[in-house]
Length: 322
Image (cartoon, rainbow, N blue to C red; front, side, top):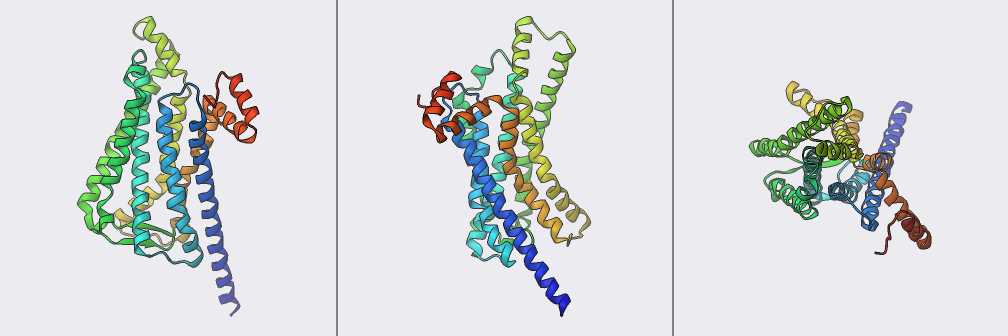
């Protein structure tokens, strides 16, 4: 009897702990990404094209924090999905779509950084604000359309009562699922590997003093490579894949061996470590981007005291009310 009571208490404590962790994660994701969006919206000084890609990532993560993560809090307490199939299908669709948007956006970031290094003298004419916005619009529309077949009723939603999330059953449309994986992961992974390999090779050449084309090109290249956004963007990509690799490896292991891992802690952990990636962005950007730190400082001072915010903006040659 005492053992049964202990198990019940342990189960309740585990459920409560999971619910609290998911709640904290939801709040952290929403606040951090709202802060990124608000900071860039408030920033009126000169801005880089890469900032539009970072905004796209922040919007995707904000939607995840608002429309996906909160729905897992109550199921974590009760152990069952309580919202019905419609909400389950919707959150499952959002999970895949927002993940695809993030993967595609990282691809465009790597292309942007590659062009900055490959064509330093023509970068500003090749990568314009309008072109960047068009690519982002294309990314969101294509991701939304590519991931829509399961939500149209071709599959049933699957409720994961261990990780307390809903997923779409892609197994019933295996051919389409494989095609979608190739379309999303193929170009993205190849572009990221190729582009950052080229960037690091050029960094090494410049550091070693190897002759690189003419003097004007070498000067422009050195100036572009000194931009901290190259390393920051690589760290963002690295953090994203490191967050999701445990889940990917677990799924591959189960598929190859046919053995289902029953450990609830592992199954819960790999999912939410992946979702945790939506929070790391503000830490990486604050640590590695001086321009973002300045913009964040201006935004915070503007919120706390408009006069101080204006004074701080004037000190760095900006005006938040322009």
